[in-house]
Length: 295
Image (cartoon, rainbow, N blue to C red; front, side, top):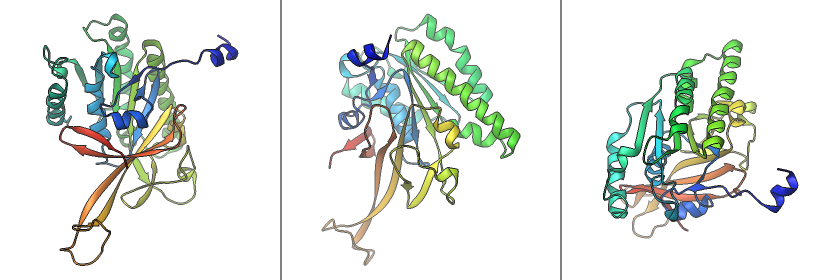
């Protein structure tokens, strides 16, 4: 394969639908396979909600934008949201009765808890045989790690020795994820947390399309720094900001408490991705799932 051949025959990457046509259009078809996509935000913005929805969307047939596949959900934050997954599963079964009439979609979601970065690497090494042998009716095509930051922020100290060891582990884990994504055609999604922006040092360095990231009225930046940013292919930032709206007119008002109400506005932004331009999309979280909003 030469650069000239790549230009003549551009590689078509399979995508996994989000389960919402508006968000799928925003992401040019969904979450790409053969790639590592990061969802980064503060707590409560919808990272885990999107991940749970992807676990179900991956089981849809190729004709509906899915991967016709099972999923592996590796979580480091406890407890696992079984109740919410069950609620989303019921909604999906109602939306696609012909597809899910013969089986429960939760039966094709494999959940694994991890307690350290070394444990995560061991799990990724162990599943190689599962990915190769494909013992299930629906092969695993989606891996979610929620969250990567929780493992590193609690395990490593801010010392030169630990920072060097942490960076080494970054590259070991990301190399394993990228290798599996390319070898088995997987869509890999990892979640990350944010920290408050302080000063003009490395944590304020511009990485990607956006000069700065804001959520809940605070300037923030992704956790784990520049080393981890170089380990992923795409970064999507989820923000949450509160608006004060007039109840009757819909106009912004800061007067009497009886006249206005508060509304949470959530948006997803493309920070960097090789296949997406700088853009953003508003979304809401409902009982039936995460849905984009067209303005």
